[in-house]
Image 1 (cartoon, rainbow, N blue to C red):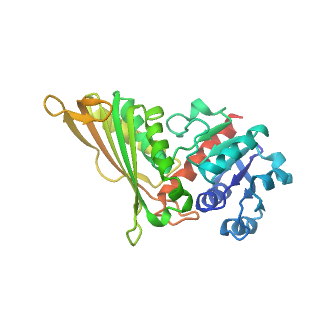
Image 2: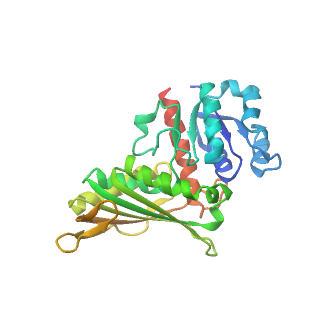
Image 3: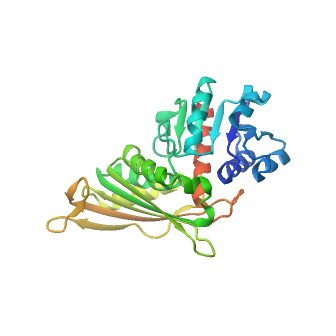
Length: 306
């Protein structure tokens, strides 16, 4: 079976890590073009060394490349603002787009939760690193009992937060919160990101608090553990850091949640760690690794569905 042609726009950390993963591992995708705007970027130099066609002229340079004719899927690893034009241009060219920015022009896609619903969408959004790590946990609880509220705290090393991440922090919180509701199944969601300056750098840690209707705790735990194994199929470094914890609220001990009022039920606390594969970035950069791994898994499923 011939491989599906792809291009990556964005030669920073995320784009370069995605390039290395695609080049090393994919049996269904072929990277035909790597696109940036800085001719001196390390990513473009690495692509040229691998024999991949490159341009530093951005989206306009990609359109002018002869390789573009054979490109079916384009990954956008730039910024939310840049993606708006990229989406407009690539849709007119009939290309499928996998958006790794918080722009969210297309539906949110989390491979283990809802990708089957969006395999034919012209543009899918990979939410955020925090969303990819935590939404599967919210969904795991939601398939056992209705979820009233979910709050996630994503803590990442400040070294793994490049200029794109720092420029998009507002979009991160808004996009992740919305996806916790629309994909994860919570009535209300909240997201917080923490940039940790510790040295040596810490791996990505995610804390997930979920308040649901009362439910069988063993069933909830089993659902979460099964979901973790599903994510590990494409992110091997994704794991529970400790046992799932439970706490019941009701009677005179209800929780007061803004927008929902007083709510009783089962609080489930989940503590995650994400270690990167080290394809281009150091293992502590699990926040970037989970985004590129999820994007690659999404593109491979799309290619198989063609």
